[in-house]
Amino acid sequence: MTEAKRALIFSETTGTDPVIGDALTRSGLTALWPWELGDGSAEVSLVVIDKPSQNASRISANLRLQERFSSVPILVLLDPLDAQYSSDLLTQFSTLRADVITKPVKLIALQRYIGSKIQPSQEPVLPRVPSVPEQASDLVRMAASDAPQEQEPAPGRAEASASPLTRMLEDIIPASPRLLTPAVAPMPVSKGGVLCSHCHRWECKKEDVFCSRCGEALVVLDIPKHPSSFQPLGDHRVGQLIEFGNIGFNPVRLSFKVLADRELENRFSLHAQTAVLDGGSAEHLQIIFDARGIDLNTSHRADLEVTTNEQGLPDAVLS
Figure 1: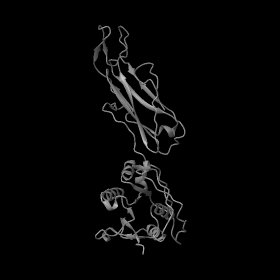
Figure 2: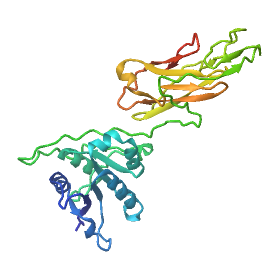
Figure 3: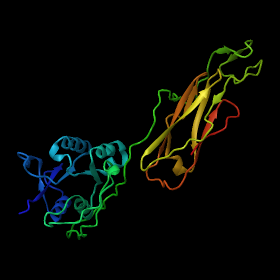
Figure 4: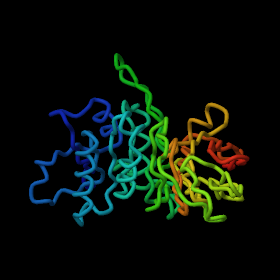
């Protein structure tokens, strides 16, 4: 006699959600609650966690530390707001090898997920579900299978659509100890003066661009000579550090703006909109591009407009 397969349920309510209960029953699974584990002899084929995101993360981490749950499929039913706004949270579930479906979940979607992970107990032999490539095993995903037949929902129950889950990758955002310090516009006037290093015969104000005696440039900005390329691997954010150097003696005032169509422009974020770069220093502007949901089969281009107190500065280009 084949032993019944069990699904361990962690729920915020005392009873199982009707959709979860129906899906388990139709897949040949019996609901098991944490207090029913007893001495741990009961075999668990699936874990379903229907709790707030932070609790679900802690429960998943605790289960993975136990040998008996090290390879058991874990399904987290996640609030759509958490799934939409917290990439770090999804990365945590990915690391814990926990699959995520956003709520409200559709009955047939839940059945298909269970069918892709577990062979129903009433069937002695079933074809194996196509394997997921090993390199994708740690990514948050919802496995799909055509094995289970679609079932009509029970009369009187309103069906809610299941939100599709895309493959999540970790963000690739470089950091630097030499980031430009954001300045509040309008920037205050620099006070004081400095002796011209070229002619040594004229004291120049901090606001001067040229020496009034010899014409030596006092504000000289060094910018990248080549375009910067953002190359996302999928639905994640990538960043670049653009170095700006001041090889002059007076401060360079910088103001940045991304120029592109509205949709593309909104995908870029700059850690500073305005900044002041002191003479003889070099610092970075951190630019982050959000590639989530964008067509990666098409190349995109944007320009970085740099407004400064140096004359004749060309634009730096982002692509």
